[in-house]
Image (cartoon, rainbow, N blue to C red):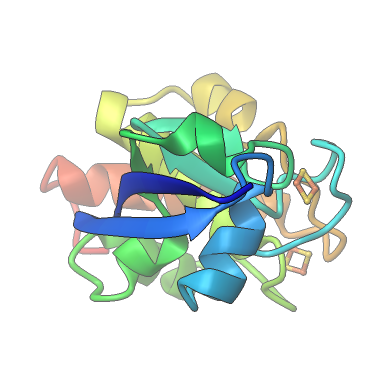
Length: 158
Ligand code: FES
Ligand code: FES
């Protein structure tokens, strides 16, 4: 039976009538037309579907929409305006090839940089650890997060 579920997505209040057990990724992509969130394994093994739930990385493939009620969700669309240095830093470092993994990786990186603008390399690697990248771009991604962090600290332009 459909429930009336309200939550905030990228700062905008959304309300939807839907079964509580529907995976959040389905709601984002098919009901709200937010296509940046990607589906990979469906089993919390690849990180392609990662979103931020109240600022913390969460797997949208297994999180049911009922658990998102009343909470704040961020998807990769939140970075689309380029205001956050992450997007420019990833472009500058050419940190991606096919790009399939990037939406989730950018959000895990954002969660880290929201906590600290001075992460260690080990902290960056740990933050990206839940994410698979078949293109092997992880090294460049780590450098891109370091570049974005430096930009947040006003040390270099991203
Ligand atoms: S699709 Fe969610 S972790 Fe792979
Ligand atoms: S850039 Fe292709 S999977 Fe990561």
